[in-house]
Amino acid sequence: MKRLVPGIIILLSLAGCASVNEKSAGDNMQAAAAARDRGDWDAARKIYARSFTDANLAQTSPRFRAVLHYEYGRSLGVTCHFKEAEQELTAAHDLDKKSGGVFYISLTELGRLNLVQKKYTEAVTYFEGVLTELEPEIAAKKAPDFYVAVLDDYALALSGAGRPKNAETAAKQAAEIRATAPAAQSWAGSDRTPYGTQCAKT
Image (cartoon, rainbow, N blue to C red; front, side):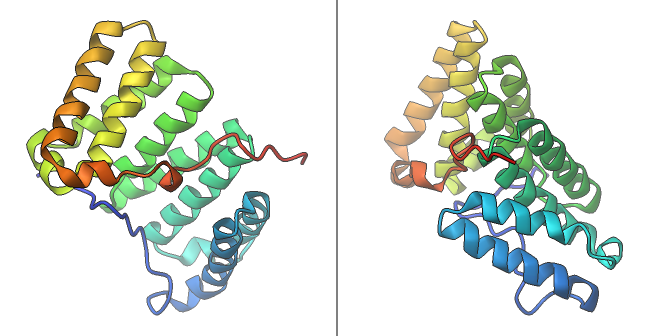
């Protein structure tokens, strides 16, 4: 059965559930999250990077490492390290897929990362990977905000890739969900990862 992500995605609760091996890396992740939440993505990127030097990281769970790669990838993308960001998000996807995690969240971020770079064909491929994992009727009812956002991004990618008819179909589907699901109206752009907005010098 295809899995569904709720409107607000909680990838992992670090507080109270980390193993001994995960504690030091978890402390770094909490510090990085604090930097991210105050808008300093470059500081977050540097803190996440330090987590990979932890000698115990290899002993942590695949789910834990997936979250670390995911968050590091997002921070790299915001600070315009696009190639490295794609590598980290791909690593998160692979770990989640192997360990039974919600791997299409990383696919969504990969699509948005490529969309910001105007790599439309690549973005289309990632968004199609996400949509393949979702049952349309269930997604529209249980996670309309997430589903509509993916469809909107998919439409933009299709348009950029020179597929206007397909883009129109995706946009129409998103509009239909908005018309029937009030929760879909609550999607806020501020929840999105602001890729490419804080280009770092180093």
